[in-house]
Image 1 (cartoon, each protein chain N blue to C red):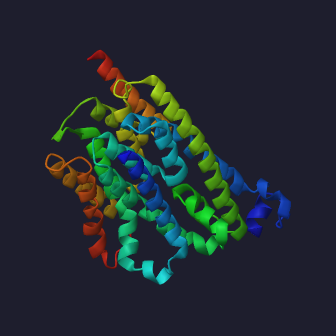
Image 2: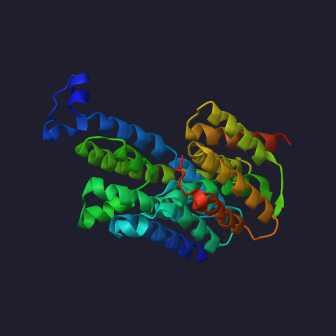
Image 3: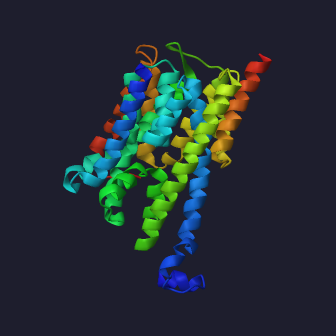
Length: 101
Length: 240
């Protein structure tokens, strides 16, 4: 139930932000510092999500099969592999390491 | 437009009915297929994080923004609170508002079309639209990309969610590593230039420091400060 409320809230806020761009007067949002911070926001959040998703477990820093998966993903990205190939390789790496350990 | 048309050996004035032969449509469909296909990972990661198939579909239909969806699943999946998940998802969606700001000038939409355009305002549809010089190409590019991604993204989310449910243990399948890799892949093209690299380094540092101290989901919100620290004093520097 709580999860449904969170899903609904996330959906409503996402749409409100999208619609705001079409409705809000330009002068309110075209402030230089807002224009500089906005493209950097996804970089900060995604960088943090990489760390929490790959190196954090139960409030400690850990190095496990997920880190190996991420390392393989980085190599795949350097070789310009498409998105789906990158994450399939990461999953396969982690699954394989867990299967043999 | 005229020069490009001549180079490609087609009439400069494209008849109204033949918009589907415009090169922008091919580009839009290619982007739509490539992006929509990875909806399968959204569906699989959503159920791996503990969402139901219906909840996974609600996020793809209504939230419809890849980065925000993955952030929501990521925070829930690593044990974060629903409030932290909503906050992370929403902060990642701020950029869509700025896309709308650019698109409102190109699209000239009113009423229900504006409501629909807002929902289709994402990285890919914006990129294809603003990448065109011709006004009609911009509009065709936006709508074709947006609709193609929307249809395929949702179909593939359903496939991924059903597949994820059927396959069972997400850890044995390495789906937690897949989620981490998804964030790396979403981050990758944004790391060009000094400011983004500085933000990424600071965000990683803030996360490593706060992760052992704060509940799951909170470090991600703390890391958002990195964008302010680097972006606010930027003065005359242009973002790379």
